[in-house]
Length: 239
Image (cartoon, rainbow, N blue to C red; front, side, top):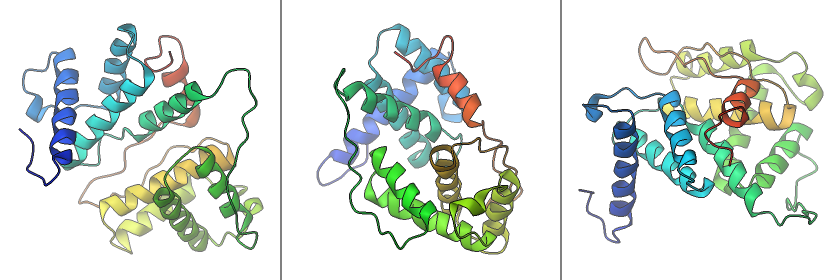
């Protein structure tokens, strides 16, 4: 079923990704999975069902990662946006591993004091969340580009910066810089992380021209809305 590879690791990844997608499609009683336009809500309903079956958080995270892999490599698409669900589950897995009743010591490593304060804080938050160094480098690069585009130097300069500025920046990437959709997506998620974890305020509604013809970046849920879905009554993720 999977592609051939020297180690067989890609075969295994694809096998499980297809299995997770098929399981979600079966749950929703989809008759033709190959053409099914699934959404974030479909995934959340599936995870809610798995929670009721007592599936642990780490395994639900594997399901999300598999479905994202299927979306990226089989559908070859960047939609639907599922990364916020994955990020929430990743945080939950880390939290569940923390020893109960003990004080957690956060070690973030060396931070260059000559960097702008917003970049220093961004690096700290990324490391505390346990993200890979490649993610840190990519997010820092995208946030720096946003700061240069909007003339921002410090955290204080972000007062008054909001969804309109993010939308304009993402549109500029598509129209003026003609970047690939994946590059625009990476900028989107870097700024989303910045707003949620460094600025600690809602990201707002984004309306930007997509890096593909006649397409637009879907309106995204705010931080509060995401928390309501993932942590609220009847939540599919919270154990």
